[in-house]
Image (cartoon, rainbow, N blue to C red; front, top):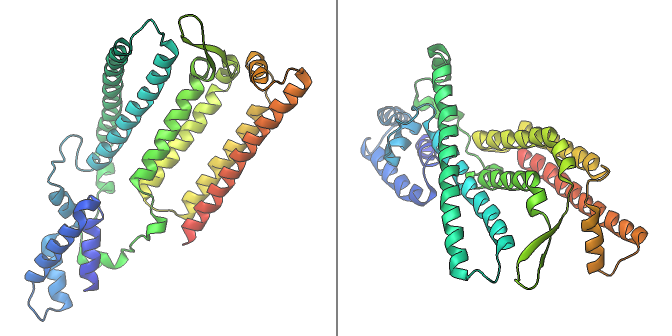
Length: 335
């Protein structure tokens, strides 16, 4: 019975959660019907051999053809395509919403503003989705064609046998890395990457001007030249984080290796943050003075001291979050 349970686990873990219970009952009934009442381990092995590899059986339950890229890469292709498309939509909505809010005036009716937003949204989403589809498809298509037959053969799994189930160790829930967790991580990365490279246009102070009531971008928080000078380093950190998130998704559970890479990423992030925050002219002085006026702080020395304390408070929070995530990763890996 243990081998039957492991076989069912190997099949159902590849299926959507809302259909696992029904398929588990159906599959268990099918297996038992294939064997005599007083079945032995040999009978179990014969029945499971007839059903075949759990991954292939799971594909049959999904009832979807694997023809777009190829059976070897299709599942990863579809998953990454969905993630990238969803992230592209959410990022575009956020950026467009900010841009339309800053351009809104009382002379423009809400209906006109809404129509303008919808038109711009549809255009940008179509462009983003086409770009995502082309890039993801191109990458997988190149991978499919660059690898020679020998390399593909080495990637193919060996013929499945019931004895393989003895090597299966169900992943505890606390150690699992879900697709939702990966998606949220990729979305967060896309959002702060977009904000970083468009900071001079969207991150700063806004105020309503008279008499038209337009929400105007008064002063950017950062000096864009300083941000762009760190572009290559920021790009490397973004690539590191995306690679780590995808690697975590592929492995599907916390391991010591993933915990170590997660620690390396956070240490690099902390070092970058400390070095970045100490750059001269990083922050726009006009923004600092404008903020001081809002809090009735007009003395430059007091204002700079207050601002520095606020920034270092933010850095402290970043360090605490990173340390907590590092220890959390190692704890999950050892559960």
